[in-house]
Image 1: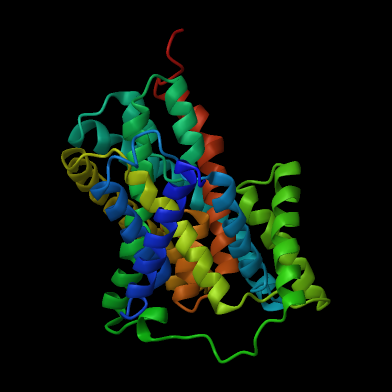
Image 2: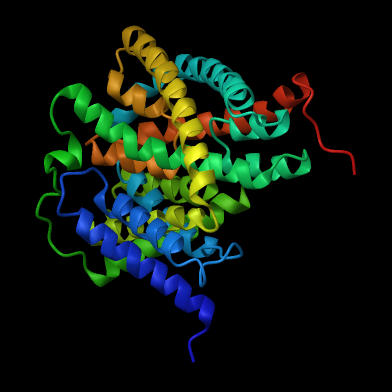
Length: 356
């Protein structure tokens, strides 16, 4: 007999796959992820009984597919990428300023417009470090449910609006929304698939062991990059496996809407739109400055400063026909800086752990 929890996981993934399949017929970027996200969110919203507030999508299962995306990003690392790293110190300085200003601006938005208490506003407004923000919010007496909702909405709003916004800005569809498709490739043999899976799992474990930031994606990415640069093995993922990974990641994001009422979602979404709009405008200004001083493409820099998750923004870069490796590196730095600066900024603002 199938366990009820397993049935819920299977139903969520099946609904996500159907949503991704339907979205694949439309000119939208990342159709398998966004369609899966939409389908899963509708399922947990319309079927509250089986998907109660205690439901959690299995994180280890999700991380296995995030690791596959890490392998995919690693295969995009080429010698030409290293030539762009000379601009990294300047990008790093810009990221420090961006993280500080974005966090303080969000803090003002959530306290003044949202009416949140200081701790809840502070951890709702971090421009990265989702899991760390949620964990520190609990220790500081913040409303963890609101912090979680605002943080997940930040990622969801960014990955759904940025590709569409760039297409509007360019005046024409970009990337996968323009019908960009992978070239016809020969089928990937079973041995190559086995090596891809091994690289993902090995990279995942290595990343955890040496405590890399965003280890579930950076470990596989580094391992795949090393293999690709040596030319010893071809780890390029077949399109169907990339689509499968997007379905799992999209379903896991859609599952975050469990137990959220329409009233709470509407208010949180309005605040999130204000916050994300502010961060995208700030990121756009920084990106324009970096593009002018470093010669790096403006759109690449804008994607690098858009405050989504590492995995999701790497997929956005791929959908817009950019090299996701450079984008991933910048987002890893953004998240690392956010986490490192979070404690000091909390002390500066007088937001500390709640008395026990």
